[in-house]
Image (cartoon, rainbow, N blue to C red):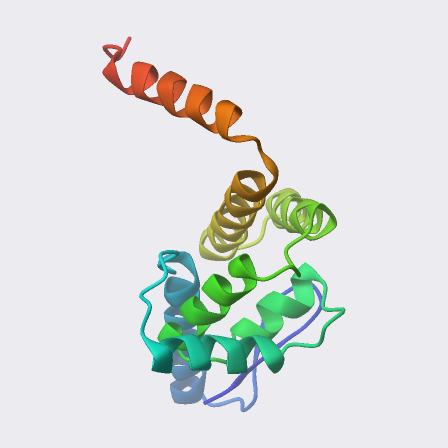
Length: 158
């Protein structure tokens, strides 16, 4: 069962029966989980590298964040995770794309979108921004951030 997505990312089942509606919700949830748990470490496996490249090549080169998410929701959970990883590793991950991701997450929050949808947008925005930042940030700043993060983790909860 495929789920059509509108520009506001509202799920519209392709048929009207309740069984197909449940199935389409399950498909969307599985895709959402696959997107959110995308592993961002490279495995070095040639087959997986080729698969990631093929998934990225299937995405239009001028795709916005919304188009990226719509495309990712058409994929199986593991393929969606591979697409996220491939996109993070590519030069297509730009500051403008990261800003679109956060704007989309904020838009979902302000319009009262379902929690799972909003959480997916937020998680993707954080993944993309973290990867973009690590690419453009000088090593000294990364080291300072790591030290500050470690110190925060060691502080007792107030």
